Length: 191
Image (cartoon, rainbow, N blue to C red; front, side, top):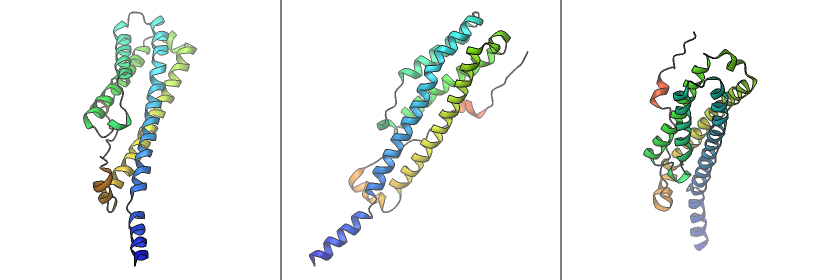
């Protein structure tokens, strides 16, 4: 009789989803690390881009300062894995990153007025690196959202939801969402 009870307990525990939820939680953390790494790469490129543009577009100080300020704010803002369930913290983090993207877009639009700068090899290299980094950020965000979907599903579906409510108390993670400014396409004017 004890053997049957022990065997029943092992079968029930093996199907409880505990390990699956732990694995999915780790996947979310790893995906978030990739997002942060890609965002850090962008932050590392910004000072070089600003310095390159500064030499050609000295009277565009407001635009350059907006990029520097947005980068400084975004660099100061940290969002650890433990805070990914906090909607307000995630929203603030996404806003800071969006401000950097907007400032960079304005800077690159200003560059159109400076043909010598557009032909400068250092600027072209930085622009290509920035474009590649933006693509990496997008891919990392997509992978993070996929990991969050799998994780959130695993903690909400039966029988994992029972295990979670009794043992783990894991909270759903927030998705990385586009900000409201992304709803409208930027307008580019060529003189």
